[in-house]
Length: 191
Image (cartoon, rainbow, N blue to C red; front, side, top):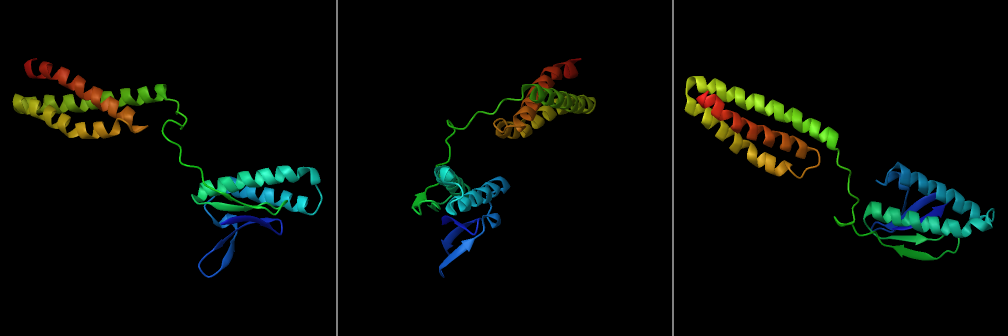
């Protein structure tokens, strides 16, 4: 694909097997902000091309190259940039995806996360202890079996959710609730 300016509008030109075809950037999945920046750049480039703003020619060239790089990143493929000022065509490659070390770290929402974890902990303790105490009335062994079944059933989900951004707080609350339920079990069985 090649990024060009035509009639004060940005166009991407590419081949589709039958020949060259122009595509309006608004029809591509570039996002509204990038498409708007391309339209703005094309208007300025057209003004420079008409000789209305000679001092801005370098700025238009640089901005066009930046926008071509953003289009290449958004589409995940190389884009040829036809500089409207000099006429030079340059191939702009998409940036490689950032590695885990290069990604900016998200701030940890401690207050919200701990609130969610505490709420889930309380709900888990109430549910597991209520089930164990109800089953204890039928047979004390059922109370122990219910704790084993609940713990074994929730363990894989807790393990998978421990690294997911939001669900890690729920997993921490459930894990803490299960631990507290096991600590409460002797009071139910022998109390």
